[in-house]
Length: 393
Image (cartoon, rainbow, N blue to C red; front, side, top):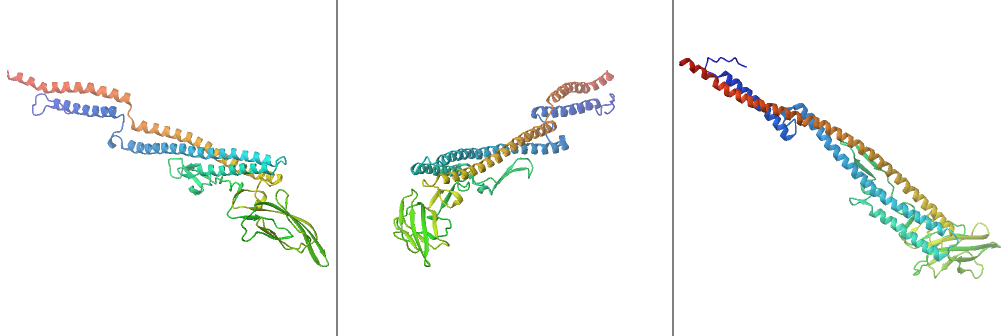
């Protein structure tokens, strides 16, 4: 500060020095009062340019981690919806297997097995209903994620590319699980047979009797002429057609059933048997190799085969539940990691940007005292030159 010369009046140096000190104190007091009022150490870029830059980046990352944390929670909720649907499908499959196991015993007759088939069809339809109803934001989750392009991508981090992917989730529909077959039109399921040329629905037939049929034929060759004696049985073993006497292989027209069978000469004489199924258009329970449909007339062996189909479906559902369960566990660890990172980032941001309230209060109190003393000294400095008046007495 400038040296004070009390004998010169041009400038009151002492008062000017006191005024400058008071202005500095007021400026410092204003800074600390602003920090106490806002709770921030940095209130404008000039307070700490470098600190503001660092704090701004940390704030952006902290907010990004908060969003990622919310995304993880949403992802876990989505997966929980899918898991709940799979759980219900698994319960239905267990019940279907139990019913098929029940029908695989010959203690049940055609009527009882028909009732079982009806229930199995309803359960298969319920599987499809669950697939249709298990949705997130209007998009199905159990149809192989078709609406999502086959995979789900969750943004589980604050940076681009920090994602978690769920891919390859199987289609849980009854058809995809191998439980049913959808027939767009009436179909005859028939394996190749040496003595059968073709089996077709009779053209123009008005009434078709659907179900399983068995052809029994005996071929005999004498003097280079082959004759056949045949019998056609329905699923209950009732005879619905038979040859009156041996004749050459040809057409068997089941007029009352809407089916025409064309026989042909086999390579060797003997007894032959062949079974086929006439199925109506619609959704049917599958049987072995998709060659027949499961009906009340199916054998115990057919229902036992269907048990294998249900077991295969159970394995698919179980594997998919394991997949999403593992992802849920992974997301839980991810959630813990993001939470810790967000807390630490927030702490670093606060250390830079926030004011130390205790320290700021101490400094404010100090400058308030200095403000009062500086004001008093300014008053004294203004009064000091008056002693020169004593020289003129």
